Amino acid sequence: MTAHQPKKAGALQHAVELTKSIIPPVHPGGRPFILGALGATLAVRLASKRASVGAAVFTAWLAWFFREPKRVTPRRPGIAVAPADGTVSHVIEAVPPAELDLGDEPMLRVSVFLSVFDVHVQRAPGTGQVVRAVHKAGKFLSADLDEASEVNERNSLHLRTDEGHDLAVVQIAGLVARRILCHVSDGDKVLAGTTYGLIRFGSRVDLYVPAGSRVLVEPGQRTIGGETVLAELPPVG
Image (cartoon, rainbow, N blue to C red; front, top):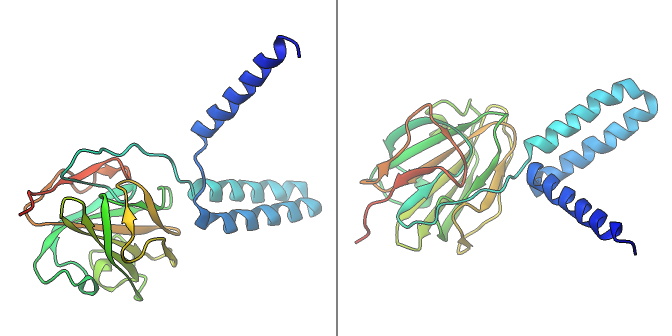
């Protein structure tokens, strides 16, 4: 082996690591769509190279849409981080979904609207245990409407943090989104900022935090899932 070979190997490894840092991984829920589009692109190419360009662009868009970028989550106690990328659409008092059995007392609800250009994975807003996970069928109204929280198809989680806070996080289907994936169930442990689900093609995510929390975002503000601190939670007990 020549002296140049180790340098070439090191340069290749560096290039691979650099590529991984630039191109985010794909969520497993998107892989069947991407593979299907890739197969269609190859089939189209046999018939027409020109037409295959459009198919290749669509395949690349799907890979981009289902991206799952790495995030650095704040680990300080007493906070709730954004469960999704998007734009804050509402900050109001609201009763959490009845199926979670969290009672009739209003909590503070921060709603984040996801356009088709946003990252569509959902992340745990805190570290703790899933008390209850419930899927409920419903309508498919535009997710930016306030009433979507009540009538649209949704998947709701009751999360009790290690500090004893009760949080609710709700994946809501939208006008285009017709499929909600949730990878956790009752009793599962979750770490703040880790991915737990996915909504396909435009949607909304609601986070309910205890009354007395200090909400740190305003309607119209952009959030980064797993990184943006949405609220400082009140003392427990």
